Image (cartoon, helix red, strand yellow):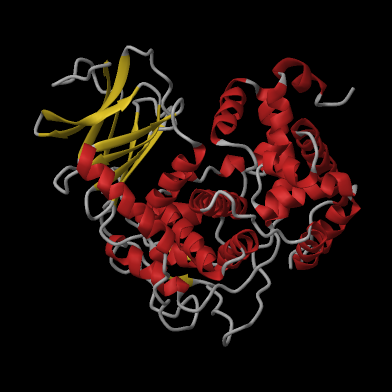
Length: 232
Length: 250
């Protein structure tokens, strides 16, 4: 899957960030957090650097590399976290946490397992879901009789589909059978476990698992058939 | 027949979980089952990768400009560990005022509860057999929250072959979160034990149990070197075996 290197941004608060093209950020000196041999040559951070080179620069404690990654993917991480959490402040927390984690543990990124963007988005989703469930658990502890207000499923589906910027992804999702799309939307964007989805849709758990799997297979095939998206 | 037929026939209900797994819609126990199966079954790994084509696409929902000041907040956290000349001036990434302090009443309240446990017992552990998933999730959230705070130290305990990583986060007050989920279960008559190591002397920080998932340990600010050993269930005054994993807090 081709992922965009220069994400489309919605201008909300002043001019867009200055593109980090060939912004020189020298990184000299000892590395305080690793026993690896220090790089002696300056690292020049640029917008067209490969993921692996940017992460290597982070290993060298080059803050410019993290800034470039934030410039490229910060909006995607924040957007996904906000979508799942439905809360700007919590989405900020998750975004900050993930970029600090990348700074402190760059070795966790394995380029063989996908792009840096997908690595960050998987973490953003996972952390956001953890927070959704922590909050749900807290509510249950505080008031076990509390009936959680759930948005109508149709609203969630239409809201999610409308928010997807990519025509390729939106049309693929729309083309799924609703019986397969609904559990996927509830689980992925609603942060629900498949058990919760089964309760919400009044279906056996096994049926939900099967529909999620079948729907994702179909979605993968659809996306592969369409091919990679042109860069935004 | 399709390309998944072999996966279905050989792995029972694990294969049925794979879709929910890539959507983060399984619980911790199921997640570990899938990851253990994937570690030994390339067909399961292949199907996960295939399903991730879809889940990664779902993640590309939209780019939204983060709030003004978020980058500055991140930058202020990393500056102490950035090399000279490697930092970026404020505003280089995004214009805006400093991010206002984000309130975290849930996690502060949870942390207060945890402190009581630490002071009262020195160590609490959540094991796979006895703890509710939401407790693990809450403690994980607390640990990750602590990781973003000034004064927090972090480290990863690894074995010589780097086959597992046990992450440790110690906040400025000495509350150490040991994410021991990657550790394999021991027999019931054994326990994992955490040690501080300094000048060749090992001092016990506590026993984690035979099948720990997450533990909260008091770790003094002077402790930098950590070691993990396998001990008899009652614990040991000094290690009876070579450390199976070691790491350094930074």
